[in-house]
Image 1 (cartoon, rainbow, N blue to C red):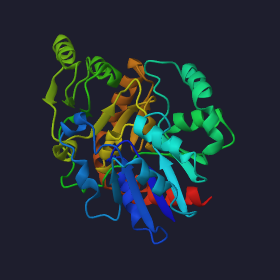
Image 2 (cartoon, one colour):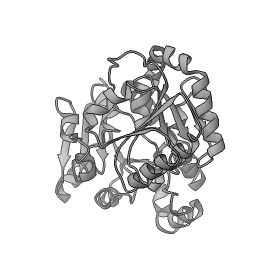
Image 3 (cartoon, rainbow, N blue to C red):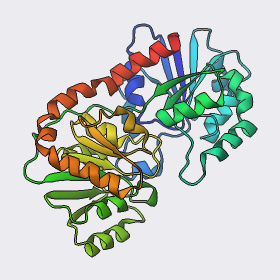
Length: 350
């Protein structure tokens, strides 16, 4: 087989399984076609996506001409083509439309609709008006998260919908369990959508817990004022280079992602990979990885009572959380690149 990925950038959340695919003996070639290496906001966080595919068998094609795209689309009958959505990126959309001129095996890899500022019914209407005509040309959808699976299954019965996920590079844990108070951590952009505000509100009156926030954003000043108002000790570390994040994570027990909407939330992968317990809202796609009560908690989005219940449970099982680190690292193997690559191959062979 030949696998050709048309993606919006060199994604650190997809390269790990693509690298594993590249060493599969049944794969003759893998091409990754992108219009950019990365976005500036990620570069400012210390990401260097060029390095992700160095020393791999992945053949990178950067900003290809139309002729090169046409050559790839005319490769041979053993090629499979994967597009990161339909309209999510203008370059990928152009390549997708060009592919319609060829009798190829065509798939999309996509998150659920962005419902933070537009209700789901509007997305259904937009899809049926603009994109339903493409359904017959798409063999399958690799749908990232339960919400995406439900959405694309509802769109049509003509295509196959495969539950899928993002993957991050595996990091070895180098530190032992923490001691003392339960240590809670947030890593990400301090914006309204991430809803860190609700965490500070939920910690009102909670003892024996330390909360650390890594990241910057428009809401940082408001969050600092809120913490002062409620007299909650919160450590604001600001933005950190991505290389520092694994070390910071290992100094904490629980990662929290309280988002009002997150198509996935790859920071959850990074935390669970290192054995952390996680608390996520039910609006985060990554909730599907959680074994409730064993590896994490899922609370009702924007519901303080529900979140307080999850935090209280973490305080109750603090010793268990620390004792299970090694077991949780081992059990997370099914969500790492090698396992996801095997699942990916099984899907397209169907």
